[in-house]
Image 1 (tube, rainbow over the protein chains, first blue to last red):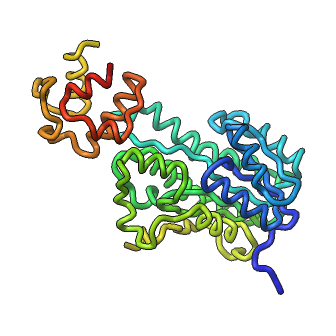
Image 2 (image 1 turned 135 degrees about the vertical axis):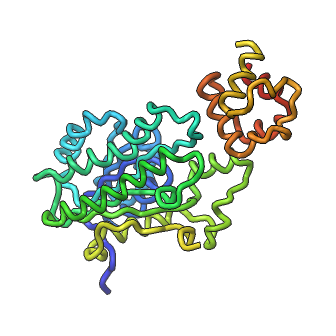
Image 3 (image 1 turned 135 degrees about the horizontal axis):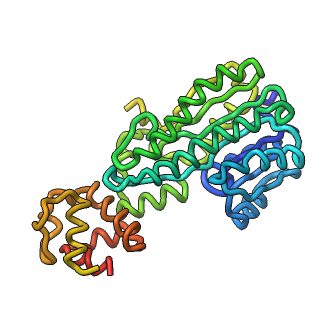
Length: 250
Length: 72
């Protein structure tokens, strides 16, 4: 029987891989045969994630993506040690909740640098000749905030919307190199970050009222990412795929 | 920072009319103290006083003095 999705011997880089959606995606891709490269800042959590992966050949790299200037060297190091990249999943991101009155330009720059700047720089470096295999697929993790907005999340939503807009440009620019780019657009997902948000709001989450399939699980997003990474989606590029339990249609 | 200076800071940040808050003001009587007002207070405590305010703590605040005491 033919398997719809397999990543046998494929090298896939995941940023923000030590928790939540990134970690779940790493586990799923390893189950599907990939050689997974984990990248995040916390070494203890990276080691913990590495221990959850199936198969062999996985590696991790400790790196703080707010250091934009050194990303190129880090990508070179990764390619030298792990081989050319077949897939890239960008799960790194910081959430910022601030009312406009306390939204400093420094905070805006920090959010944009990490959520948008690091994505662009990683894509630029990975798509250089010699760093990727033909058929490279890139999946960014956006948010419903990019499309629906919300009070207090201006910088965060704008940074995610910037990624979605970039994907629509880069998918056209990089198509001649046989590279595809897409984003997934999750809503409320049962992650440690969501638990923090819920605690802050006293257990109340108004978003779930519109998310009529209920609270999502990291697996729900990981499955969509795996599909977009795989040749099963080879005719799909430049899209933002909602994984939102119906939120954006409500 | 004196309590009066903290009150002025809260008034400025919540864009409340200056001079309307006292230590005894009930937060439930402050129209600007809605969900965004609470988020504003959380960020203010973090930025200015380096204190993390949780949802549970903020729900226990009754008067302006409770906020001032938390700010320390």
